[in-house]
Amino acid sequence: MIRNWIKNVCLKCCFSFIRYIDKQALEILYRPQDVIWCEMPLSKDKLMKVEPGHRVRPYVVYRVEDTYILGFMCSSNSHYHVAIERQFMIEKDKYGLNKDSYVNTATLYRIPIENIREYFFHLNDDDYEQLLECQNATVKYRQEIIQQIGVGSLVEYKGSYMYIYSCEQGVFYANPLVKAQEELSFPFPIAISCHKTVYYLDYGIKLKITYTEEKNMICHHQLSKKECKQIKVKQKEFYEAHKKAEKEKKMLKEIKFLHDIGSAFLLPNGDFFVYLYTYKENAYGFYMDEEGCCEEKLRKDNLQDMKLYNYCDVEYIKEIIHVLLDKFQEDKRQSAIFLYILSML
Image 1 (cartoon, rainbow, N blue to C red):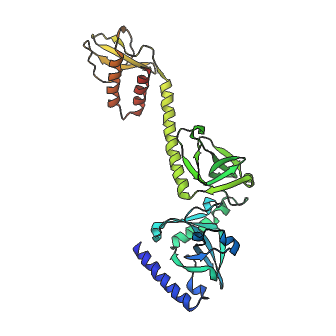
Image 2 (cartoon, rainbow, N blue to C red):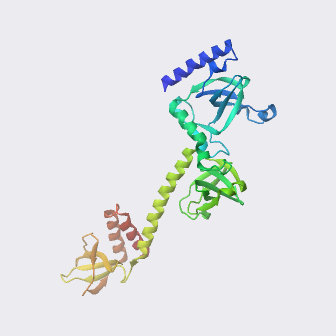
Image 3 (tube, helix red, strand yellow):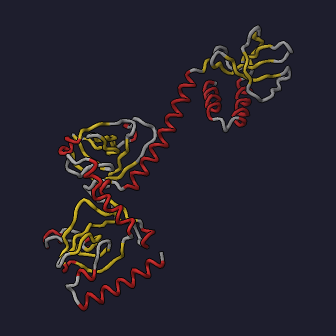
């Protein structure tokens, strides 16, 4: 990182000196893969509408001509109205930058010599090759449509907001965006900010929209690849948690109470089997001796030929269940059953 910084500082000095000698020598000064600072190639009226701190920005040089260069615009934020497939991210740690930089490979800008300010740094071969792959990615992906909306786009369609999470075989796959968590079909919210408004991704609902409907969509924001990846990871975690919760819910529906919780059945040896619940035709509980001492283990029994002798005190049952909870704390399934029983007492 320090070596790259020293190299870039030296190159800046060299380029500034050469430019001072001959301002017209673009081919000597710059080459493809260079990242240079340029004033945005806009008319004066349009340039005045851009915030002062953003009028000069980095561009990746694609081709050098006699009086101008062709380059891709860079931004510290993901590019609005550009599909994620056509954005390449320059990692800050590789080049000693303060922030990651996002390159819009969908558009080549013609930048006159008078707009060029100074040299910034040089992209390595691997990164530049990946950048060129991004330039063609959407063309190969879906040639038949205007290539603006893609994975990571936050769009408005028929009055509703949605997040595009996939594009395959002529179809956009989207999740609705809602403003209130209460409207979600899934219990795990993922928040997304768009134009200073917080939306929640309802990934429990999956929508399909054909590419031909792109003309009816308004793209309000484009998330970066990193943000899309974070959402995908969260979705996977939440899907697994939801699946587990549904499995536990299904299991709890199979829990039956064929006897009162705490019913004490007399065993042939004079001890007692204290009943807690029935699952898949088997009774579960714990053994207790005549003095009320139990072995603090969960037991299974069919209760055949056993007679109901007495009922244990509710507080005593709660105490034993809490002991069993401690013993089964790593068994989430069994813990869920014990908590369910406690809710019944």
